[in-house]
Length: 194
Length: 355
Image 1 (tube, helix red, strand yellow):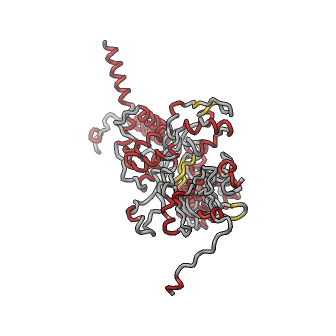
Image 2 (tube, helix red, strand yellow):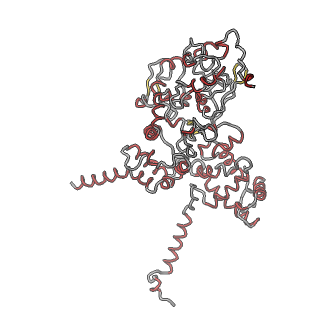
Image 3 (cartoon, each protein chain N blue to C red):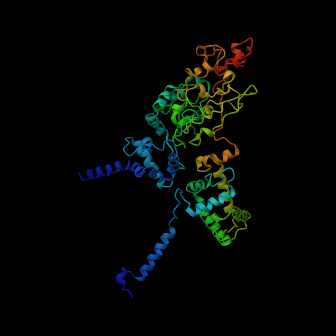
């Protein structure tokens, strides 16, 4: 047996060690998970999962999808601002859908093909997701992410989404319409035309 | 004595803390700036911009900048970041936009000189205290869309009284001589772009190598507090008494149309529209107007010595659109103005003899 003095624990009592470990664990649980590089709130795994989620709602075709249009960044930014109250909802929903995906498909949600992701989200939309993961069957989480994805995709880029006016270009809305005002009357400037 | 010494040390420490945030930003070059989330987008854009060879400090100042406001702004940003109150994207305030003029001038002297002699270098005082305008038109927030667009606040924060009866005065007197349409109205410094082609080739070798427009060209959208690149700005479908008017596809003039805009009828010359009709229909604004100074001097010679069949010295014609007695308003002049009895048939070129 190695004497306790050789492992530097001569004065550490078992009770003290347990108490310290419990305290460290508690402190660890209270810490916020580290955000992914370039993100403010979402962890790398959460950002991937949310990216796959919003890309299922607004998939890319000849125009950018939700992820490419910066919807994940929009939600991430707003989770530290106006959506602060939804932080725990997002953390819980992203964790739950990933666990559901692992248990049902054996892969993370972000790695599923579009059709399989769509299948899970359709179940959530109908409120038929497992109740042990989503108490209401997933409807509330689905509606929340859908609403925020729409805002991030179609809203003004100043809020962090709709990167490069992706959706406005898609639907043919100019970022800056030509808006004239009757500052001068034609009669003053072009009398021959009046 | 001891208390005075302590106060001195504390005061000195506080004084040194002011540029500390500036030191923090520039400790590791551009990457240090990008450490803050709100700076990331701006630094990312800058990396792909034509100004990527210009260090952040060259335009934004550094720890040795003597302007206390600059350091206070940086300190405020760091505090805001730590407190989780950072905005979506860091941007320049109105005072910094004005300071940028000096920094733009360091490298773009010729452009700056042209702009400062042109109508777009107009000062706040000339725009917002114009008696003729203010006594006949309402001052409104929408004025700030094209003039003083970087001003933080509404028209009532800038001018008083907001009525047609003067005398009017600027509530921010220090702005009186400041330019109301600075460089950053039409230029986005961080805009993605490639290095320019050799501009000496432009006149000689028209074609793909010819510069179409500067990648920095973008209109400052006051609502979004962001620039919209010129390529995304629309060119309106204009009409002249029901007839569709041909307009140049030059994307640069989309910037002009943002402020010199027609009314929603899209009728030529409605609102502040200047779309040319008549013999000059289809020409871009910039075919005649110099980019920064907006002068048209000698621009006729760009085309007429080679193309004109009339035998008229167009340089001596009064083509000023502002002159109400001019019969040759450059934006509307048509063949019939000089040929009231009918336009003569085009003379056949002497090709038949050659054939």
